[in-house]
Image 1 (cartoon, rainbow, N blue to C red):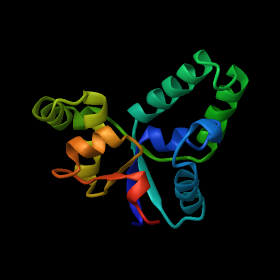
Image 2 (image 1 turned 30 degrees about the vertical axis):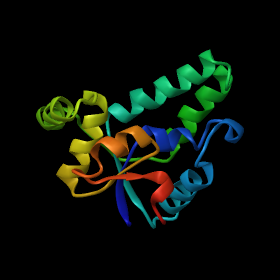
Image 3 (image 1 turned 180 degrees about the vertical axis):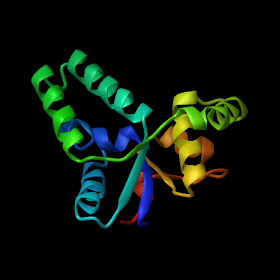
Length: 145
């Protein structure tokens, strides 16, 4: 794989404590490939709010400090991950969400993957189980980079 749509569940593993996360090595491999220019990634602009929400939950659960959350946001911003507007994807995302009983948030990533002809790389096993047979959704744990 040389290009993908990146789910916030993968990026979160770059910053959350490894002791409480699975697939950290795989996620860090994705980051390394992106940083080296070997992997092109794209995210829907929803990614940024979702990533922030993951950090907020982690602070709330005392998995990380507020300072670490702010540092994670700054570090992620320095990666300059390109993002795509959700508005043109909304109709397709709503179709996917209603047809497959998943949130519009998740469906937005899938719609971007379909539109750009890139696989969606996610750590969300439930999303993979529900949609991978129909859409280009790949589980982080099964992808060889």
